[in-house]
Image (cartoon, rainbow, N blue to C red; front, side, top):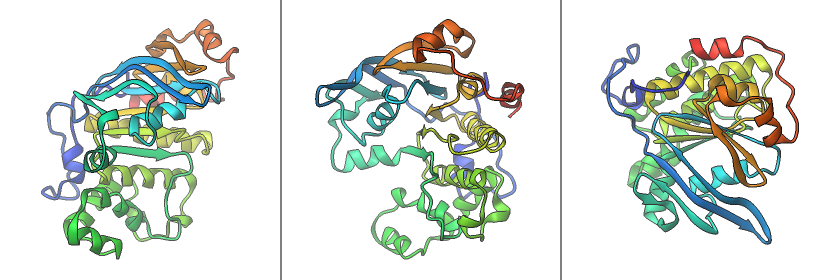
Amino acid sequence: MACRASRNLHGAVTGGQHALATVAPVMTTSVSPVITLDRATRMFGATRALDAVSATVHPGQFVAIIGRSGAGKTTLLRCLSRATSLSAGAIRFGDTDVAGLGGRTLREHRACVGMIYQQFNLVRRLRVIDNVLIGRLARLSGWARWAALARRFDAIDVEAALRCLDHVGLLERVWQRTDTLSGGEQQRVAIAKILAQDPRVILGDEPVASLDVLNGRLVMDTLCRIARAAGLTVVATLHHVDYARAYADRIFGLRAGRIVFNGAPSELDDARLFEIFGEVPQSLPVADVDVLARTA
């Protein structure tokens, strides 16, 4: 499937020691940890948003989460990033239980988790390069961070941002205001910003839900290609089942806060879809989306 990783471009994307035009693949192990969910439960009052969810995400996998609205998809992402805490159970990144993190260690965890949102989460009046450089803030400290808040970045950070824009195919847009770009281009800038953050895991909350089919496919191609090249784990909620089938290595189907499907895209038949959604969702009007994913 499209995003199984054996090559790592991650350091070449953000590192300052390579020439801009040559982002060369380097054979290394994946940068992402094993993610383990062990009976993860999240309560909101009497409501179980997550109900004893157990699963394992292996390094470099592209995992799609599907399900109806209110199934617990976004809550699961927020627990992975520790934007919210579990009520019971555990989530481990490698050997680290994220429930025990606080202060500096929690900030470090959040810095290692890149989050892509449906509405891009960009400052639209800023130039493209400035938005990507925002991704470097989590990696800066002391005077360098204070200078960055005034939009004064070291040359090495600017070079890293340029590499990230080159990696998503938007180097020619570097000096444009972000609000002059199309929706698909803005989401690719958001991906470049996440790359500049130098994450270990990428989470996506409906990253293509606000885009038309053509731009959605382009964004998914870009995200999948980068994940494969960098050896990064991606966990993304997806509204359209076709995208999950085409791009994911593994699919989690959530219903009422529980995983009712955990398997390969080839195993997701109509009976499984009915178990997840209570109906068989309508397909996208594109028959070649899986071909594009395989060739990304």
